[in-house]
Length: 228
Image 1 (cartoon, rainbow, N blue to C red):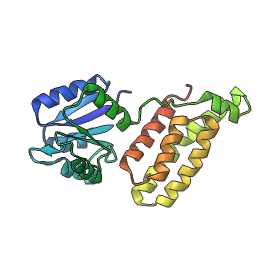
Image 2 (cartoon, rainbow, N blue to C red; image 1 turned 60 degrees about the vertical axis):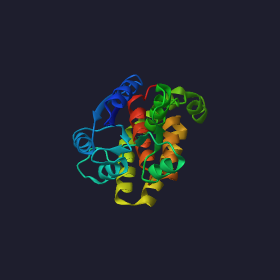
Image 3 (cartoon, helix red, strand yellow; image 1 turned 180 degrees about the horizontal axis):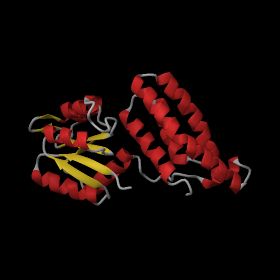
Image 4 (cartoon, helix red, strand yellow; image 1 turned 30 degrees about the horizontal axis):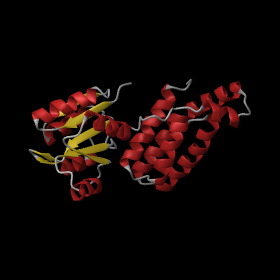
């Protein structure tokens, strides 16, 4: 399934360039030119990434990100967010990251830079969903055992994901970490390499919205590609 990106950019030339860069990633993109329209779009549709200009006609990118995180009507409040800005000074980048952006990209940048940033933001890089060799080693070389264990693993995964994310939403970090610890061990048995990495990252940084989003994406990948 192709990722969906909300691009918030008020300059028409920048918006046209960035829209083309996102579509060639490839990803689907919707464009908003101010905070109000971005908030409406995020309430109406689930996005996999937000790319937000640091300065907008009706507010700052940081103000918009805070609205998106706190608004109960936003479909995916844990969506990973990237800030783009013409002011690439270290101080500005540090402030934007402190305000909750997972990364900051300076404008203008070449298309390859935006593709690299999107890959990192979406957690879809080069890590495969499954490591068959590792799973076979764990199961004594018996492919039928690997297939059986993966079936059980995938059957339990949706409930585990809901428990982990629900616990984090309620602020029960200990419960979430307990389930994440169990999930890490299960990933090792079945060779779920990408999910193991995302699980480890969320265990270490449970308050990180980007880590939560990467974890959700890795779960979706494991459920969609169980026979890889």
